[in-house]
Image (cartoon, rainbow, N blue to C red; front, side, top):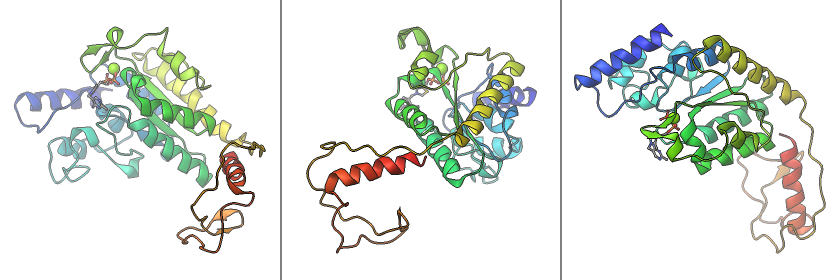
Length: 276
Ligand SMILES: Cc1ncc(C[n+]2csc(CCOP(=O)(O)OP(=O)(O)O)c2C)c(N)n1
Ligand SMILES: [Mg+2]
């Protein structure tokens, strides 16, 4: 936590001296969230942070000198100086590219968790974002997908009371932020972000649940839903072997659409979804 605070104070000082190109978004006061969350992760787990993510990056053990060089746009930086403060990336340390677009991290984390699930290992993805992000449509699509596919992703909402400079009460209605996420059937817990131990415990429970949950996944059932999609698709289906599409193969011009027409295609899609 001390390292994160010192890193941020150094960034601020450099920025005030006009030595940083572009803007920086510091996480001063939010160090315990990043450090507590990272303490609950294994080295093979992934982190997706935001433009305010220096703390999450450092907490995963990324070299602070290479991180600072990146903030300064130097060639010795994590991304050769091309990404800057908002894109500190170190895949070898499990840090996927953060994003300057509010809400963009959730679909990325959801996709990463889908890959983890399909690979069959027990790694998870931690996705950190601010409370203002819960007003973004892409965030809700990602939450829904993560829920229906029971993906091993932990969504960590950092409520600092502001969306950058706009107070939350001006942009958000409703009882709680957690209620929005719980609406998708995702278990939620509120924790004091100033208490590093409590954050580590709470994220640790969520991580354990995410690792466990994967093993309980069941195949979906095929439901005959006549008329769920009517009409005859004009596309040609790619060749399939053993029930799976053959990677890289061109569609077979001799093959018509799915057996049973569009209804068959719909059922097949449901069957595939059940694998997740
Ligand atoms: C799609 C999009 N809209 C607007 C912005 C401008 N913007 C940058 S930070 C921010 C506030 C986000 O608030 P929150 O999610 O609470 O994160 P915090 O800044 O508090 O960490 C906004 C609106 C942006 N970067 N991307
Ligand atoms: Mg905020």
